[in-house]
Length: 304
Ligand SMILES: Cc1cc2nc3c(=O)[nH]c(=O)nc-3n(C[C@H](O)[C@H](O)[C@H](O)COP(=O)(O)O)c2cc1C
Image (tube, rainbow, N blue to C red; front, side, top):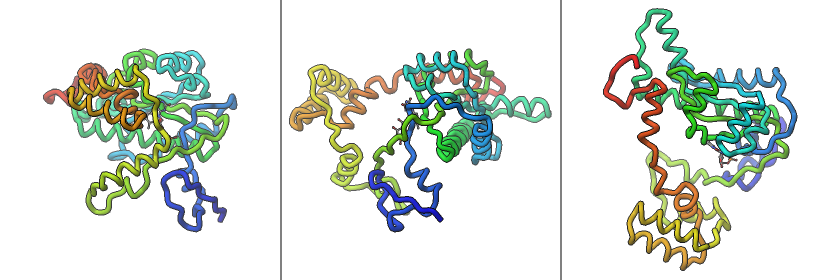
């Protein structure tokens, strides 16, 4: 059997003489998101195999409550790229929109005179969300195994209504995530991850010591020291104050000035995702989800 050298930069301790026991593990451990695609087309045979991998993914009750919209035409790809402000969406030869789909099962129930209330059930929503993502991830792995690359685009969640109109989504079909698929221009480099010792808990959830936790994140984000600018300090102070009050804002700014840089978690939640606006729009999302035919967060009322 062919073995392959393991890299040392991914949070997995070297084992088995530094080699992988099989090609599947090499693929899984060395995978990375691909955001630069070549012009090479994906053949129908290749696509067929990739979709076979998706439909054979595990799924709650073997119900397969998901659909995949395959987008190959330039116009919708360009539109998606503009909407999400991510150009690689247009460059990828194929984009796949993964959707929860209870519509198909509802139709089946209607055709065969069976009761149906899955769209009023949080349990079924929750499971179908997982089913959809698991099928998507099977596609990623299958694609990787055939020399393709892929990247998820989560920002589609800001455009549910537009996606419904663009792709004729009926009630009971809710977009989850977009996946861009194509041959990589160059092989993407795996990113550093937290190690097994941090992620895996034996028997019970164990709290790591503060220093160990900090060290784990420092190792994941080495040298990520964001330069202090007046504008950044102002924004972080504003975010901190809105979320945790004046005292916390003062403490955060003092910490930054003392260290001489903005650390990665201050950047993540102070500048990038912005803790003060993160919960914005929750109510609007509920309105949209209901508009899409799901009403599990209301008092039970069947058949939306
Ligand atoms: C649900 C989800 C949504 C994501 N959305 C985006 C996105 O909108 N744009 C992007 O460039 N990458 C996106 N990614 C890719 C992540 O940034 C990437 O997985 C992460 O940085 C780790 O890098 P790696 O995949 O190379 O290991 C998304 C990934 C997931 C799982």
